[in-house]
Length: 371
Image (cartoon, rainbow, N blue to C red; front, side, top):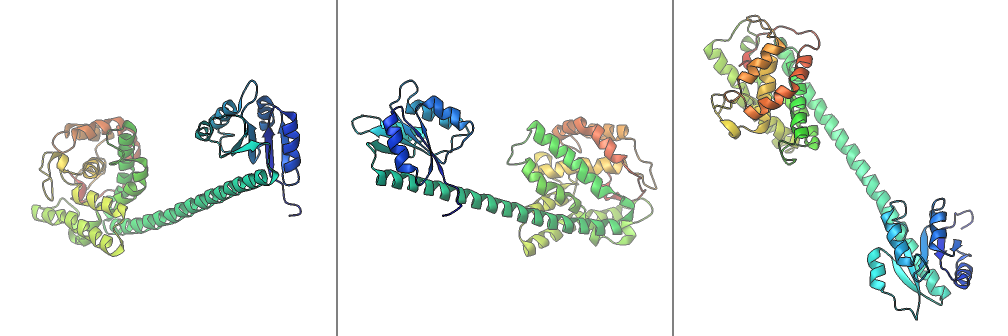
């Protein structure tokens, strides 16, 4: 085709007559470099990347097998298809050459028609492989884009629900966003320290876990404003009603999952919503789970939730200092909190303190986040 760039072939043979014959056979169809040694091949490879190499096996010094090993060990050249060239009278180990990565063998003296057809076939295969790689890259790009759009929509829906919760529960301030940041710190440290297997926690899971955190108090939507925004501490009966937000939130998330598909982030959201008020010693609610019976995310959320309650001002209490709040969390190890996770908390407590005091704090009275 006029104007089309010709493909490049490097022919490597220590016999000049073979180089001349091979070049004459190929020059009308390809750009040909006739090279008399392996050393010359590697010199040209520094500036020219061929589409295919025709490589003689029996050469003095560095033979074809030696050249092949070097080519395959260098990522710059490993993908170049290599056809070994051998004389009919030579007993060469074809299997060894194929195991080293050669795509084919041709024998000398050359048959022009066979040589051209072999080269044509292998270049076509390489072209198809490249097209498949491009198609695969395009598909991966499309999947990533669609996944990003889904995650964006997911985040938008969750944040809208979270804003609705905060709009009704005006006195909790930025509780939802802060607890999300606390959880990110705790989980990030767990991943870095390798305290749990990648099947339980990984950086990939963070894309689903962290956006699910704002739904942990979703059940507050079902609590009356009289209780939710009471200007004072709740009575025992009112607190019992407030505690129902856990079960109500879990059921709401389940209904969303049933109607909209059992999305991974919704499964995480259900776990956090249902178990973040359970306690390590079994004295929590709503079920009274104990120790490792409490899912990991629930145990983590308990620390984030209580820390935020401690560092937040309420009409009936001043906000605890970051240092006092840290002390209370540490003292709760083995009773309220998982002792191992408290050790993790201690490593990021200074970062918790920065989040707690980042921006103005609004006072409030909601007891759902209290000890």
